Image 1 (cartoon, rainbow, N blue to C red):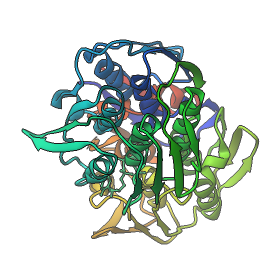
Image 2 (cartoon, protein in one colour):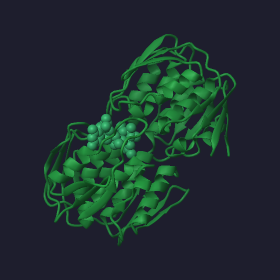
Image 3 (cartoon, protein in one colour):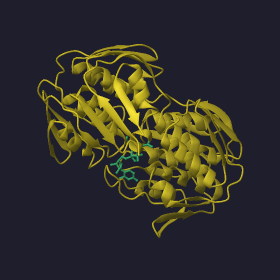
Length: 417
Ligand code: UD1
């Protein structure tokens, strides 16, 4: 199994180009199930979750090609099976996204329930509730959701919790349902709007995406299209923190800084100098790093997917910071590894108290999930000596060659096979 070796102490400097957004690419690829035509996507990041989604589509009998240059050609003319098996869903929970499109177009689906994961329970009850409101019958049998319908119809659906993939799943289903669907308390994440834009390109009638109320007028048929995925705001944010934590000077290019307002504002408050351009931003790390509290909330607030990386930064702060996680109940696994590197962190339920100013020392650490791995890389960049990060497959789920991008900025980092 691959490991990453980092030797800390070098301020990063230079330019880094950001890949397409993993969390926009996955629903976009799955949306190809809604039409028999070809869907051509651009700016698809060549990461593990994208390749898992390709396997999922191929497994159903769809044609799915993903290339390292960021293009993907997808055609679900025929499908032999409407099933997402446990083996694929357990490695990538976003596989639940096939549920809505399959039921909407083929009137049936069998999708493994994701179950628990390292960051908490992550139920899919709202995905199921929404489909039932639209006229699907859903049963849980042998760990699978088995859904069928004689035809979906529009419905008013109030989502009691803001759910990103739940909103996306129901938006895709509603695109082919008869009549109007209203999704209330919908997720406003840029990835949801990106999916809405793709669906519009395929002939769907959707308005209100990017707000808490999305209206979808179902159409009989969708068609193929060509669409370019938005840049990955979490990858961009991770490099922003890499610049700040190493007191480096990095220009983060090919991104949309407007999707990172909360993260970049927070970073400025910690003392980094942030200069924003139209499709890039520049971060100059400064000493001292000011400790600042943060709380994760749904977009446009500070994202849970940046919480672990921000915790790594706060270990270097000049005081204490309280980090509150409101989205997932168990998303502090990285704290235990950061503590092994010398950080002073106390966890109390959904809050972590990070006392800064502790020098980190390199250690052998285990990545527990995707963003936790990123925080360990960031900590390794400032730790004294060598850090070895194990279970790098978590990192590969969502970052395209992070070690090569960081090495080009001057970091002493390598992948060891
Ligand atoms: C998506 C992102 C993930 C990010 C998360 C929150 C993708 C592929 N993944 O995950 O990177 O961390 O949004 O921004 O886009 N919930 C329910 N019932 C449901 C669904 C969700 O109670 O049916 C709860 C969850 O337990 C959690 C909260 O809603 O507490 C938010 O989860 P959700 O937005 O659904 O996360 P994902 O879409 O899985």
